[in-house]
Length: 453
Image (cartoon, rainbow, N blue to C red; front, side, top):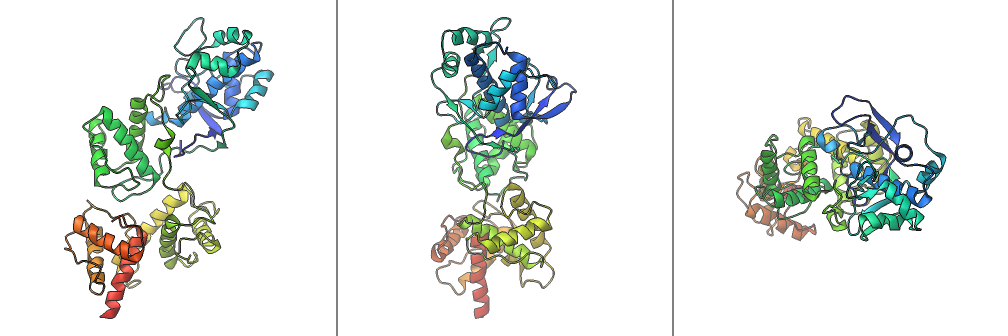
């Protein structure tokens, strides 16, 4: 599922009508209808209500665990769950459902089980308790417990332990796949990078040939690339250090495995592990550096596209910024909602890079003054670093606080020190990392030197 700190209830779920590898139809059904079908297929409407509710909560949690961990999608399948009890829960497409079960599901379909201290939906394993037994819940056993007067929660505690909680009234949303829709590589930044770093570090505890990444920030640096390459080598993927879709889902599959997220006894995921550092969406009224970075990217695109009005670059998501973003969305076939979500963010970066790569001759004095479309940071090499070093040296000609550096295309300690000096003097975040705002400010300082000549 998409990168969220709190799981949501999917509006719908894709069910494979057969065994995972079997050629069978996939059906997309609403999540409540899926649970109604499963409950009507697996339990009896004549059971005590407390028993029915306990079983339905287990079925909801089981299905949500499959969705949240992308259990089948990490294996390359295009569905969320199968229809067979050999692997999952019984789903009989097109069957009638029992009225009292339908009413109960409508009441509790967005409630689920968690282990205390965890955020992922609990893998609520269960069996019928007669022809098959398992370490989890016994469906027929819940009847006896309900007849003894136990509540649904007490029944679940009996089977799953005293350390379970129930989440009530979880939000219902269209659940997106977790893959961000673009490859992550050296210079990428965002919440997705933090996710990959955290997951690789946990995997490295079981696979020590993967080097630990020291800083769990949102910047894809050289250490991240080295860890990705080691992971790719171990799991027979192309060793390019780039997290494309195949590497993303392989990392997630191994992460799920080492933490046993699809098992009754799981290491679990704590709230601290899924805390967001980067906003999921940007909309009118927001403020800060992420808004300013978006405005800069949008402003460069708008400079070369008369259909898009120039936004301010001030870190305030105001009406003008929204209008500019809406125009961009219309121009590129996106829903013009004026909100920067994952699809718009990806499209914005793609268009920006294409724009910079195809700047018309004489449109700007020197394209090196334009941010290259990826963060530039320590450990990187190449033309982007060389352009940055040239700009720094040009700016240093008339600004004494900036040290001159060697132009060797290698982002080392001296280049980082120069970047930090500029950030410190200009009131920017002092991290030695060159994003669009820092690059633009260095460019402005360089232009001042040119004008002084």
